[in-house]
Length: 348
Image (cartoon, rainbow, N blue to C red):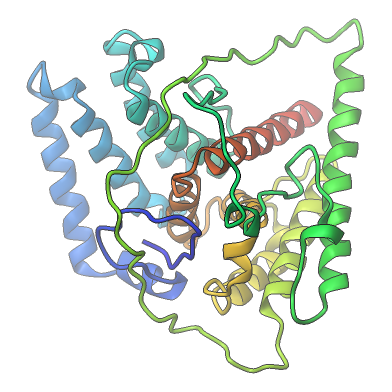
């Protein structure tokens, strides 16, 4: 899994790796053999009428697709989602999973990842998570802020504290937040026209709070790309590179996050983020981190870096073990998927 810092404890079963290592692993003979063995295992599962629709089979397809994301073939990722959707339908559809809170979370998270990566609509409903008990915000929790350009309310000047070029960082994030508001407002105006026939996304309430049974510290490995030059500010450059991709995409007709004009900014994002992803800034501001990873995932469609970004997005969207983080993170992903949907409407 990619290198990540999180304010929450979570269970980790394996090394946490950076972009260069993920890319190297994906090209090794062992990884290719793993893919072949996994395909054979899944094929054997599909021969049995019970095992072919089991959660284990769904999980195997999800895991397999993560390691094939870097094949530069978005259509292949969509085909993996086709397989998951088919199994879900064979079990009675998405609503049949509602009592299994953990599986609902995995299905919707995976569905959102594939939607962000491929730029296609999600297959399952965009759901709101309703926790089973009130959220209590402690003084420790207030050290971590979930505000981002994707939240409906954000005051970065009040919450952002960084040891260098803080004002530049705040201005950049505030501009991206305003860009989201303006883009959403213009979309709503177009939807209000009589010719619009758009229907709202279906919502399925989820009342069981996700639980993490493991209480172990996060296992990480040293970043081989780390930069310790005090004159460099890779956190700011990562945010600026993300902002460049985000702004150019939302303000240019017929543009996609992965379009060629965004390639220089995407390379800059990969280069700089790989040198600072262990910075405490991302621990304190998981909302900004999630926005950055969502943009990076959308921009890596058809690129070899895709495995790193989808792994990282999977860990980030599933890494909030507290109720507040889980709900805010889910809403941010939902809003980003909606932004992509609005972009498809503009193109059509």
